[in-house]
Structure formats: C-alpha cells, structure tokens
Length: 91
Length: 438
Ligand SMILES: Cc1cc2nc3c(=O)[nH]c(=O)nc-3n(C[C@H](O)[C@H](O)[C@H](O)COP(=O)(O)OP(=O)(O)OC[C@H]3O[C@@H](n4cnc5c(N)ncnc54)[C@H](O)[C@@H]3O)c2cc1C
Ligand code: SF4
Ligand code: SF4
Image (cartoon, rainbow over all chains, first blue to last red; front, side, top):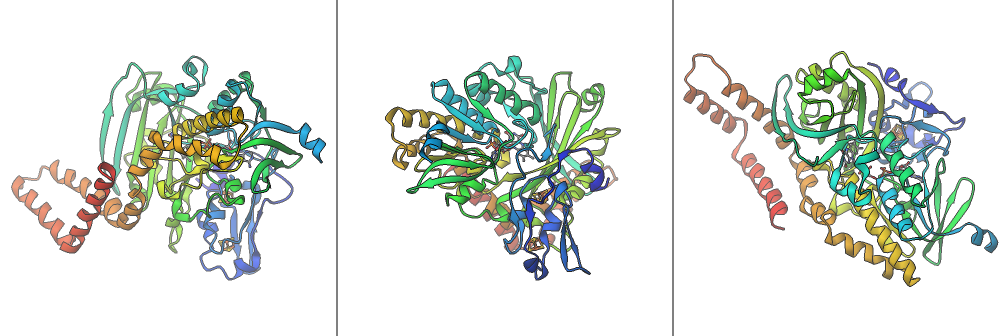
C-alpha cells in the first residue's frame, strides 16, 4: 500500500501556511537528507534539479521525528494552530 | 498589563490533555483549587497515538470507577512474545483470565476524551484547540503561558506536553533530544469482523490478546512491533529508534510496517482486514539517564515530557498518570503554603523517587546502551539462533538427534569467535546485574 493510500485514511484540517520550515541553505549541503527517511508521512522530498526540499506539510502527522533527526538541527518546527493539522480518531 | 494578569490568572495551568495532564489537573481540582488544562487538539486524544493498553490498577488510582463508564475495548487475557525470523517464528505465550484484568486495550481518541470529560465534571477548566507557544518567565520563575490568542498566568505551570516537550526545552529543563533517545512509531488500525478476531486470537467477545514482536523487519535494529485486539479492529504497529535510519538503504517506517504485516506468521492474523486509520507518534526511549530536571520555580514536568516511559514493558500511560498525580499533590501542598519556589516543588521529585517510576527506570538504566552496543548480536544473531534451534528441534530427517545437537553447538562456535562470545555474556551479565542488584 502506498503512503498516499495510508494517509487518505486520516482526517486533516490543513493550514494555509507551513509549520515546517527547513533552512534550504543547510539542506543543500546536507548529506543524509535524513528527514526524508524518518518521516512516517513522506512529507519531505529533495528536488535535485531545483536544489530544494519540497515540504508537503499538509500531510504531517506532527510526530516530531524530523525535528530530532535533522542532520544540522536546522529544521524550524512548531505545532500547527490549535484548529489545524491532524485529527486521529483511532490513535 | 497588570489588569490582564489579574483577569487571566488562575492557580494552576496544566499544558497537555494526555493521561499525565488529566491526572494532574483532576487531582488539583479535587482539592478545591482552580486549574486550567490546555490541550492543542480539537479534543483530548485527537493528537495522541499509542499501542496500546492502559493498566487497571494505576488508572483506578486516578479514576476509581473507570471500568463502569470508560470506553474500553477488551480485557487482555493473553500476552504473546513472538520472535520473527525471515520466514519463521518462535512464540512464547502467557494466558490467564484474571478476575481483575491487568490491562484493557483502548483507543486514545475515545479514552483520553472520556478522561478529560470526567475531569471537567470534577471542576477542571478544559481549554481545547489551543497551543501553548511559550512559557512566560519572570525573575527565573515561570509565571504563565503564551497561547496563540492570549496569555494566561498562574502560580504553577505543569508541563504535560508529551515527548516533544518544546516547552521544557524553552526554559532549559532539558537538553536537545538525540535521535537515539526516541523511537518513531507507526501504527495501523485494521477493521475486521469481531468473530474473525475472536477466532484468530482464540478469545471471547470481551477478551483481548497482546503480541510483542521482535525481529522480522526489525532484525538487527532497535525496534519492537506490537499487535492489540480491539472490539472490532486490530492494532498493528512498530517502533524503531530514530538513529536506525542513517544507512543509505534504510527504508521509511511505513515500509517496515508493511513488511511486518506480510510476515508469514503475522499475515494470517490480519488477512481480509481493511485499513481504518494510519497514524504515527514518537516514543521516549532515553530512560533514566535522560530524565530532565523535573521542576524549577513555578514549574513541574510530568509524563512523556519527562521521558517517563518503561519501553521494554510498554508502560507509559501509567507512569504518566502517577507522575501527574504526584505533581498535582505537590501543587496542592505548594498552594496551601503559598510557596511556589523550586525548594517547595522539589517535593514532586522526592516523592517520585520513592515510586516504581524512578525505581523501574533505574533498574533498566543500562538497557538501551547495552542494546545499542549489542544489537547485531542480541537483536539479530540470537533471535535467528532461537528460531534455528526450534527448526532443528522439530525436524524429522532420519538423522540422529545427538548429531543435530552437536552440529548446532559446533555452528555456534564457528559463527562466533571466543572474543565475541565473551562480549555477549559480559554484556548480559552487566544488564542482569543492573536489573537485579544495582
Ligand atoms: C506506539 C506507541 C505505543 C505505546 N503503547 C503503550 C501501551 O500499550 N501502554 C502504555 O501505557 N503506554 C504506551 N505508550 C506510551 C504512552 O502512550 C505515553 O507514555 C503516554 O501517552 C504519555 O502520556 P502524556 O500525558 O505524558 O503525554 P501524551 O499522551 O503525549 O499527551 C500530551 C498532550 O499534550 C498536548 N500538547 C502537546 N504540546 C502542547 C502544547 N504546546 N499546547 C497544548 N497542548 C499540547 C498533546 O496534544 C497531547 O494531548 C505507547 C506509545 C506509543 C507512541
Ligand atoms: S535533514 Fe535537515 S538539513 Fe537535511 S535535508 Fe532534512 S531538513 Fe534539510
Ligand atoms: S513531524 Fe513527523 S510527520 Fe511531520 S514532517 Fe516531521 S517526521 Fe513527518
């Protein structure tokens, strides 16, 4: 099953602005891009052509794994607003 | 400024409506004090994910009659420990129908919400859909919280904001969390007919079964899987330490879960089920050595925010509830004295040290270090060895049994050099010594 299929079972109220703010300069020189590997929602994707980290913040499950794993501890991370983000019914 | 302070001032603010925060707030309200419980989710439980089982005895310490009205799924009567190889498994199982069940499976979206509603009935002021962004600190004393909309002030602020506890970090009560000190956990709740659940797990309608899963896609990694039975769903998930994702070929957590689900010993249990909801959450794994400073002037820190989790036993909600309760009692004592200094609130830490919470975490203080050091051995080699022992033991191939045994033993000494064997036993003794003696 793809991650998109899994995520489609979750209720979200997406915000219009991202609560995840990578420091793209740091990302350019980041070797591991480990945020991509730990994220349980496939939020991050390194775009090699554009030299940019794509952040599908609206899929975020608010776990905090990327914040702790980030190679250079440069990932700006906060909880979405109280009315926004993920809503688990069966957590 | 001072007007607003007076208007928005209460006796105690608790941040986070999980088991720790709710237990804490209700303890304070029961003593007749004003307490505001702030939760960022739409309702308590809507951001929370666990295995899981809540434990009867500690839950009764907070809600003595919870079994009458709480949304409980099943009473657990069986606990299985499964060692998964690539395509085989060895399972140890303990089953007993206790008069008084040790634990119940629950769904946090229902159970936390129920607890919060109960707390409200007992006087807790519950504020939902509100994120505390920052603590307000004056003269090195925490005097309130900043939310998106307003500032609230209080004599004491209690941080029950869970594993990420950005607030404890803000005021320097704890260091930055390292990847090796948390596990990322993914889980799926799968819809399946009640009858099928009962048949496959050999249980009656209200009975439950827990699986703890070692190995499988987690072979050689610091990770554990779990299965819980709910009324008409099954929960399956796994947790893996964050520093296990550094390899070039490491796969994301949801792929490991898919691998676990398709393991030949697991797939038949969940066959024909339908994914109801996918979720993820962090588990604190730092243990005793990573417990932060537990209090400061005007502030205490409880539950996951304080790393109070016994991960080997999947115990977290109980440590959360009991630490919350003790912090609540400490707040009540402090309010009666009118003293909110660190010297007064240190009572919380002193009392906590007398309980199973700190004692258990101390007992397992070396566990994670040993497992990190020994994972290719304990979490890969020996797990496979256990399975290969039973493969040998159950084989029928017209070979004399003594020969089979000696081959098994010879292989062990071929695969492991004396130095490695010494190391394996040395670490095992160190671990046991730590658990049993000091
Ligand atoms: C996969 C998994 C399986 C587990 N299995 C079990 C099990 O079977 N049994 C068991 O006992 N334990 C289990 N645990 C551990 C258990 O879930 C935790 O130890 C327990 O939930 C901790 O309770 P808490 O109240 O400290 O934190 P949480 O339950 O995390 O509650 C924190 C609350 O604070 C809120 N919050 C956070 N920040 C803010 C903020 N800034 N402002 C406002 N609100 C905020 C959150 O929304 C949340 O409601 C498991 C954990 C995981 C991840
Ligand atoms: S790990 Fe941190 S620095 Fe590296 S790509 Fe991800 S966000 Fe950028
Ligand atoms: S918080 Fe968790 S789900 Fe959200 S982007 Fe980070 S790792 Fe992914």
